[in-house]
Image (cartoon, rainbow, N blue to C red; front, side, top):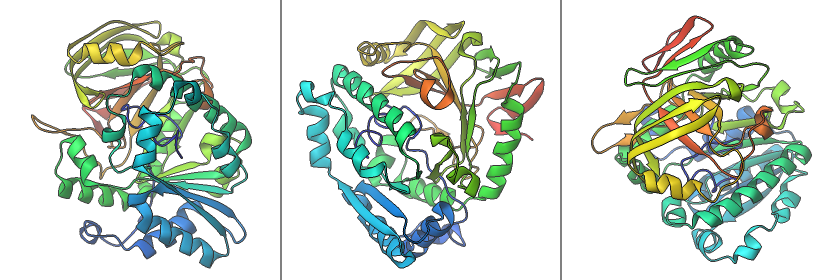
Length: 406
């Protein structure tokens, strides 16, 4: 999935469909999962329970060379099911040329070849195209990123209109990803597989409880002890829960974004009535182009970011955002993590903030028009982590200092 699986991941952004991933009860214990997984057992669960593939289904299995062990087993299980798999393998060499060397005149080419491959598929099972996006995407000219953003927007619009199948997005841990996150690989891998085996029925229940409170909420408040204080209302905006269970109802939904699941996962995202968002945001530590973004603060007035300041990384943020067009500084989406096995780890050496970590809140500026029925349209955006948040919905406190309390 050349565009969707690279563009936003490498820029520390999070959009649907995206790299967030979902699952429910892969194996019996987490200690065994910290070792090489049982690919056969995992593939059976993905094909049979997560996706619910039927005989005769057409399934595209997409990933990078490093994900081949799992791709092969998934394709084998699809054949045993009587389905019709086709494997698409990405290459770091080709991706690097795409990001850095493809002529700008051709970067805007609409990716019709990809749409032609998948639009008639019943399922798209996708994995990371590269095990180390940092080496590929770091230092890319922001002008190229803006061009790719426009191309990606067209692809998402066409997919949401023409693709009637379901998407299963599977994460795949690598030492390079752990290094980029500043966390040792043993810890990173163990957390990943533990999250794959989390209790997704409990995650589903938690997500549905928060979802019911959010929909139509008149007053939502997010605060932190270090100074973040923002309020907004939901209006009639949409919210989605990726709870690890792709139900029959979701597979048959006319809504493209309801037919999406990820592994490991457990999160919900929603678009507020952007014009009602007001307050101040304080972020002590984030990332920009894989570098540090420290002591960030900005105001939000009627949904628009103002007076952005950062002690370190401000020039990077401004450089990355400059080429993008549209409502690129307008608040668009919030994400709440639901997976209790994923942990935020922040210290002098580590800045690991998985979006799926239970109670972790993320604020996004940029588009929300396609999946969320919002009015914000832009070619790119940015995510800001809000660790240790307290969330209050119409007077009911559901998250306290980064911990879900229901």
